[in-house]
Length: 218
Image 1 (tube, rainbow, N blue to C red):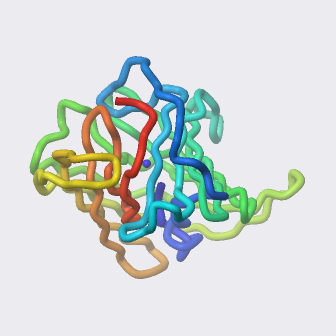
Image 2: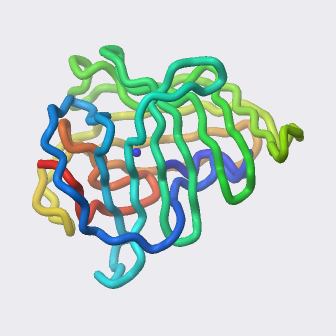
């Protein structure tokens, strides 16, 4: 679900991509699935558009319950091509909120206050829906218990469900909801992205332009 939102404030949210080549073959998950899939063990595999099938992929995995900044959260791992990041989200009837993430390669931690609303309540997810807000973004380097402030500022964000489209990607054919994301950091230039989402499946195209090539559930 993996985001370049800051590293101009840590690069406009540090790019959501992660480490080492991993196989696209994963055990099939057969448990229940929600509108926003978040069950422990779920796995999504992505490639940049135009990548060769043998190129190392990126992988998003749901690791399970955790805590972040004193709040209960679900921990996700984003890995591939020398990167590794852990995202902390709350998935409730009110939608999906991003509390922050940890970047293992740089030993950095990024926090959003209030959390970013990545997706609204399922009942509000319709063509034309809009949501967003403003969050304070604080990043720190954490090494051996020592905390060093890295960057801070505000991030204004807005999402808009602009329509539906039929698409074909490595993982199959889907009718996706097309979502635009606009980011306006207090430090850096505005950024515009497009996300493709399918209820019960997840992101078919991430905001970084990665396309779904495999998943371990139906």
